[in-house]
Image 1 (tube, rainbow, N blue to C red):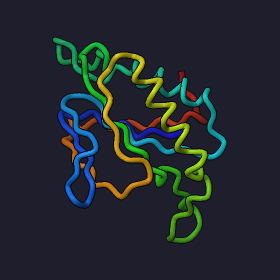
Image 2: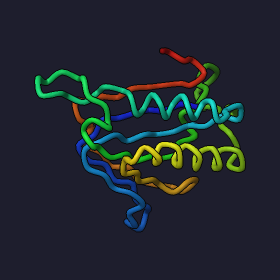
Image 3: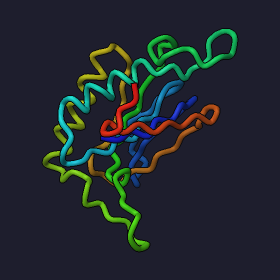
Length: 151
């Protein structure tokens, strides 16, 4: 399971017809890519990392606060292209990305577990074509892969 985490001052995800699926203010935009070998332990690892990641400024302007410390919000968007393999040729392969029947339940489970923290969570629509707009704060963008755990 992979996350691309972006610290934002605001973010919104909507459809082609401008229907807003989710919108947040200060917080994190999480793009989540799920592969077929992912399990609940991958979810647990990433939920813990997201909630504990100290990437928000404290009163001294040092990145020392977590999403919980600042009472921030989360916008979670599924993105199978995070598992693009680009080693061979110029057309990415998505063979490692989980099929929807595997990925969607894991996506929902991730949302359920991170929502249990009490943080306000918004989402995109799984499998839909969406437009994401964001104001990256910093900019701060962090990549975490549960198969390459760093403690």
